Amino acid sequence: MILTAQELSMLQVPFTGPIPVKPARVEEEALLSRICVRPPYFALREMAFDGETFAAQVRAEVPQGAELGPIQGADLSRHAAIAGLCRAALAQGDDKRRYYLAQQAWYEGHPSDAPYGSPVTLRASLADLSKRSARASIEATAQGAPLARLEVEYTVLTEAAFERLFQSRRRLTPESGAMAALPPGHIERRGATLTRALDHVPAEACAGHFEHYPAMPVAILMGQLAQLAGMGLGDGPVPYRVVRGRVEAQDFCWAGEPARFEVTPTAGDGGLHTFRCAAHASGRLTGSMDLTLQPVELAAQG
Image 1 (cartoon, one colour):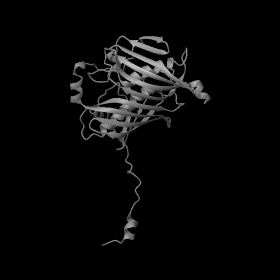
Image 2 (image 1 turned 90 degrees about the vertical axis):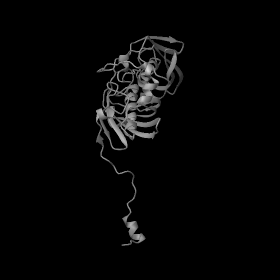
Image 3 (image 1 turned 180 degrees about the horizontal axis):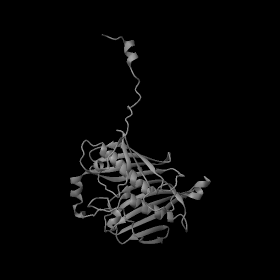
Image 4 (image 1 turned 135 degrees about the vertical axis):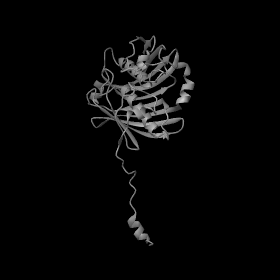
């Protein structure tokens, strides 16, 4: 039977985008075999994947400080970066283990009245994936409202390539139930710049990042710098929120190395305070960040 053009047009269905797929549960054990981080650094829960978006729930895992919201920006960035690399791993054509090393990240936060420790939902989508790089976008919500949006760029290495590049850093890392906090170190002010120096980074503070190659995660680095910047807002603790941040990782800070964090204010306008931040290990630059904070008193007036 031959149909006329009019009859064919009657059979056509308007294209409305991909057919929705019911999210399928993602098993932690299967996912961990394909990625480079382990618990306790990996702490995603209720993971699901619908073929396009990887979703997970997280909660704050560090004590509450001066930063407002249900979770600190650095802690959220940690979970978001992991969600992004999980999305990249699920897009690979095989189930081989790869290392997804965060190179750059952009963070934009939104005010939230959710109590500290409230569950946060992450939704990660893949913007780009090649043999050696990946880029993911992550949306975070709390109590159904936007909390933050992040973009993370990764360098992708095979397991063999990572081990070849960093074989001199290999050491046995026993399993740990929780990540240890960094020691308080020594804080001092030099002019407008605040610095914090650590004699060494304990391996326990790097638990799960990476297995047998303990290194301080970029998110922990960001957290140390954000805390220092928060101290620069006043003589005492000043509640604040993270408005935006841009992070670039230049090198690893390996367990056992001395570390130094420094923040310098660069602008203060309209209630927003911008800082230039840097982290060093054994004298070399390991990470830098441009960070904008907003004190809560000024935020409430705005």
